[in-house]
Image (cartoon, rainbow, N blue to C red):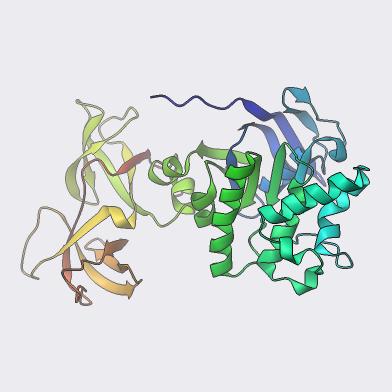
Length: 370
């Protein structure tokens, strides 16, 4: 059954923004839908935080329009947008209690006192901090401070919650915990979350949809699975997790999309979803966990690629090996441990046959500077 897409909540159309004469965003288009957890992912300086600040009204666009529920908010002041932001620093008031921090926005709106008490208590209960209402921020852990910042951001019921690198200050274990809590909270509230991060694992874990950005433009927009398994180009493939990039040349394309190609010297069959001609160069992409390796004797031949183990690292559930092909290309191979073979390992310089499951490869046009 086809799932109906939620209606558009925020749209950015033809947005451009420059700082000190340097263009950061140019002709940028994006639609954000009701109730989704969308992540803007990319390296530092790609423009993702600028997009967040433009949506929030903290920066003014040089060109283009922003709408919220079909209403143009391009020139609307930030305080009238029904959009709140959780900053990386949390921006809590150190001299106020947790309760007063969360109540601050409601008091500014002159909300009746009885309603303030009810809504603040509800917000603190939602983030499991109702027993911390009288504490000051310095008496809280990093994760608790973040929950206070989130409670303050949602207590006045915004239509959109923006989160700018809001987990980056936490240690790894707490960050993993907060990823789960944030996603569960977003589902409970039904509020649209727009999350900014440079952390690929964070994006894959939390998002309904990921927008990968580079140099102020969108490289790919899709679900976490689409982004990871079907990267649109080498930048996306390399930015999201580990990837092995093989060089290939088309030998026969008569039966496209099934083609014959020479991949690092090995002739094999590939699936290619764009037009190619004999002699065209290609990239063949495979994740470390997509590769299959088998130990073979040093005097044995194989119909697969041949390589030699140059390094191996124990990763708990997996064994990660660096395998050097006969032409010198280095591959990363990730193998899950087999409980029936507890001593599973490879010796350094072990000769290996390298293959992959048919059709698991991603084939892309060749990029000269790759």
